[in-house]
Length: 65
Image 1 (cartoon, rainbow, N blue to C red):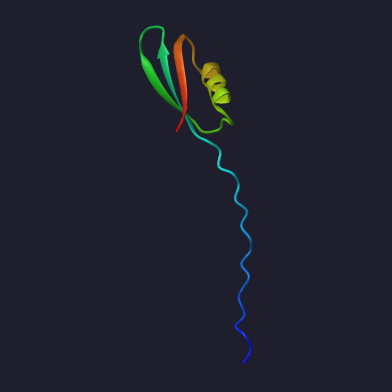
Image 2: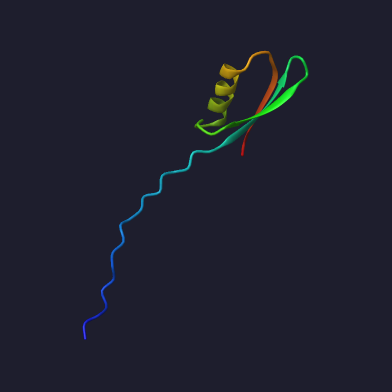
């Protein structure tokens, strides 16, 4: 008897997951809003993306989700 042959499955390459960030914004009029940023490479990139999209920002906090 011959040893059982194993099927070789194609090797799956895992692409590194991009981090997802959450940004909390307080506007100058006192209102607040949360933004989800999924296409940023780091927190500073996420911060710049949010600031480019919204105006009248009084405070901005970005965290890894």
